[in-house]
Image (cartoon, rainbow, N blue to C red; front, side, top):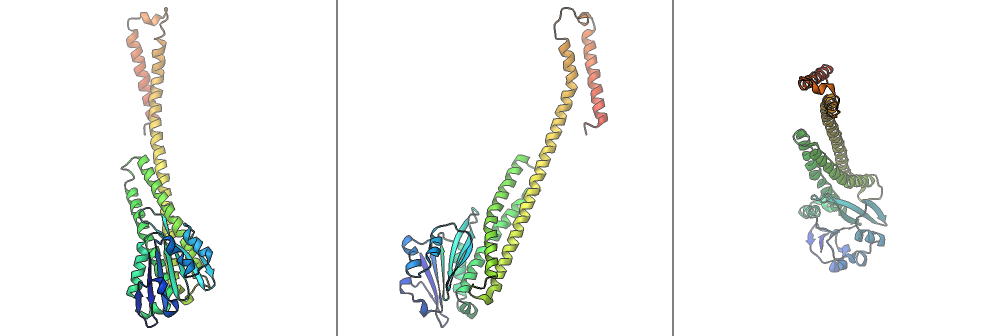
Length: 318
């Protein structure tokens, strides 16, 4: 589906004009949004707009890394939105011309709809009208980046909850949750960091349209810097939690091994005595002693009590 938004030279807005009847020179600027386009609609990138073949190829073959390319009086941007359910990146391509903006994406995206509605609502504002397609491009980027925050805040809430439940669940369950959070943070980082690098390039580029409006792009860049710092801080926290759980698990294992070692050590001499008198030799003087059985039991009790007292004195039970 292709939807169009055209701003006339007398500040009026026209929606829904088919590209076949739309003459760009008759308007102040135009926004054409290719939303889940068909193969026939995708061919209009070449037949109607005459975009560079390399840019058209980048649109058709996803998933490209966020980037900025220059083609004469055209800037081509590859942006990444975020699927809030899977944290996978959704590619959005922008063609910024002197009097038009073309957005191209393979999936219905709420961020593009929000940007579209914002431009429609403020199209009569001279600030929006005078800035032209660069205003729409900024709005799209701003909405895409704003969508990153709820996903990161959700991860941080889960991380805080996980930290509070540290002593209530098994270490194995907690470790699985920590690694799941780290995997989600990694997916989010793979989207945020390339977008941050792209905005840095836009802010410092001399070729992007609307150089006087770079302060707006700098604001988006600041948001991405904040996101990147938050992600790194959260990854460090998950690493600390992971190390804490590993140490806790090691301490528990050491305590268990110490207990088993003490029990084994106590029973070793008892087993030795029982083994000696269980050998069934014909000549064993103690076997004929009337009080031999009770004597051996007493010896075992003395040995056990003495070893326990010695272990306690050494602090092995602390």
